[in-house]
Image 1 (cartoon, rainbow over the protein chains, first blue to last red):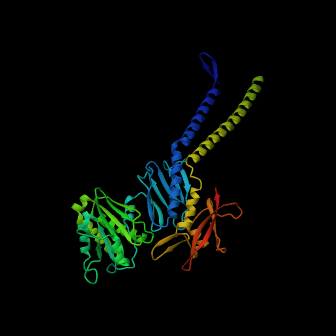
Image 2 (cartoon, rainbow over the protein chains, first blue to last red):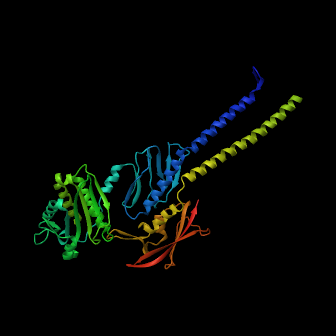
Image 3 (cartoon, helix red, strand yellow):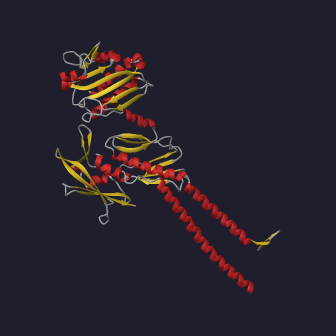
Length: 303
Length: 155
């Protein structure tokens, strides 16, 4: 069979069909190569590997923790099952990223998320998992260690070390504990009364072992409340618990104010040493709320 | 008759052409696929040894594996191995590996009787080795030891 051409004579039909097949093949190959070569497939692979390693890391952690996944996850589907991370663009995606992690026996992570705004990887009460629910993670972060101290409030003393602008707060905290000791006095020892200042070292020298907590207050020109906890190895769980209780109580009483926790190398390694930095406007307007929060945290700590 | 022979010859040449072209095109396709997959793997490569170090950390740090935890204080002691936990059952629980992935064999310089192997460990294959200084907690006492971690990678 032939096709008649005006200028060059006849053109065989099989050449046309070959050309059509060649074009079809060319476009199939081109689209496959394009899909493979796109950055998306690299991103999917990277995400699956990164998440699998993150899960492996959480399994290695000795304590509970959570990680807000820092990359944008809203463009992909994520599945976690059979100890593997799957990252896909849609339900059926042959170029999706897959990477395995090593789980623990009887602890299967089986979750699926479609275009999640954010992903949270966590280890809560020793169980590793993934969630897209921020509230769930925040509830966890507010949960304080359930750690019983060996001591009772009446048997221990707490040094409160206010700066010049928080003397009143320190005094009010001390007054809240009047009657705690058997002789009717408070177990809070202030470093600063009016203009008289006793440094912490001299009080510790005098009272020594009885002192359990050292709590500093500083008023500063900022917006957020800072809770700075020491890095004491000896008392680190108690430090975690006490700073968590203070944070929780402050959050309950001071809505809309940011509370930031930090760790620093502080003195007195054998004491639970915490410094609370309070913005000026809060000490002026909401001193009572801060006092109630701290008093409640101390009570809960010894509960 | 001559025409028919010519047609047969052309048809044979065509078939040969299609076979050669088909093989060439498929070969080209796989070559592309290989190059691209290789590129993807290079682009998303995990830094050398990072994965295995993360997995080894599980043995050195996690109380779910072998590390000693003071249940009263809830304090974990990384690099301190609780002798009571040094069993293969415990290893299988805390490192639930299938055939693929890293395989480990753990042994100790002064606990010759204890050798722990993950399920996918192959005694007949070569391995790399890392040594860690650790402590063993046994009956309320701590003593120094060396931990030998042998590593195999199963693809």
